[in-house]
Image 1 (cartoon, one colour):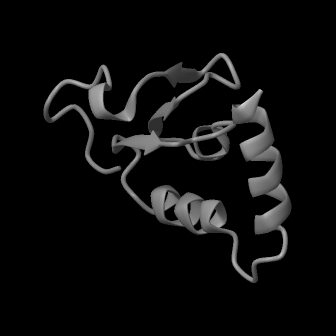
Image 2 (spheres, one colour):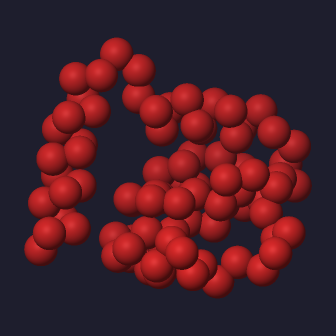
Length: 86
């Protein structure tokens, strides 16, 4: 569907970038305290969550993997104050 096509095109596009944004996010989150809780909006395949020791809540329009929570980004299931960074 459209979601899969979008992510296929996105993956092809970012391969040409000199810096991979997800790698930068992984490095930043990995440097945070172990008890830091992170929200990853538009997570795709949840690579951030699979790459760090911190708890990551992974959200996207479609759940591409079991650990991804499918939702409308304007109405996530997060409680106020339940994450440290996004």
